[in-house]
Length: 131
Picture: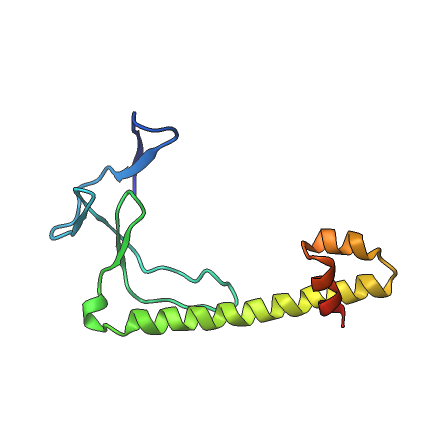
């Protein structure tokens, strides 16, 4: 896809990316212009390969619309649910690593106020995590 950045004159640092090629026949429109077809999206989490299998229409403003959602209306729901579950797992693992790092630093004699500052915690929150 060849794109060109169109700098708007109203407002600071505003730009819109528009497709230079001809829009596909029957393309939906958004922001008063035909949308551009993109291939199926890939996973944002490398260890959790999730793909919708759907191509998507995109607008220069960033709006996205699944192209084939009519074939299976619940596919987007299943995909979103799987992504939320994957992110919960990742968040749980990150929380455990965070608590282990705090406990290790405390065991090595790190200064509690410095630990709280480095972790972005209040002294009470730090104390609760170290218990």
